[in-house]
Image (tube, helix red, strand yellow):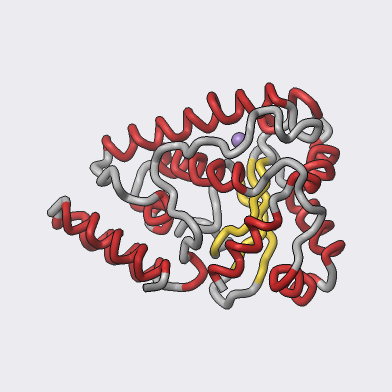
Length: 248
Ligand code: MN3
């Protein structure tokens, strides 16, 4: 059974198990949307709790300092996860509902759900997109797709950097796959992401970069460009590549 079918089956079981007839139209809509390749969540499905960080807080030094990582993971991101669970309880969303499902129908929920659901999802993906001693660029099918979509890895890097540094205020930069399985670069404001039905850019996020000041201010202060340049040294291209291959 493909991951997508497994995911849909699990989602539907979750929807049926609670017996809440009022949830079904929403679940069904989400499911039909999730059946498109652009939003199939490959490799993992995000619950409303934080996964353990796969490396120590100081592992990404000197690119990201330990204090920033610790505050970011245990305060900022933990706050989004908690507020998301509170919103899910207040708005009667079954606790087993994946965050991906929630994102696809986020327009039906509160601003609190949108901000904290996005905040939680984006950070869970962000931690996985980084690792210590990372390789400098992707390889295999992902590299080929980047070269065909953006001409070269260098051009991809400049475009992604531009998306990250020109995002006014707080937000995220993305490499994502659109509904035609094409790679795209975009940025979103606040904690929005391409899985959200309210987002003007839609698709499956493959790689994300947090450009909120809390992600870099202690070390880089106002120098977001330096943070973005250095961040490429810790991108976990193996993870992004596996995610890409699972989705395409
Ligand atoms: Mn953040």
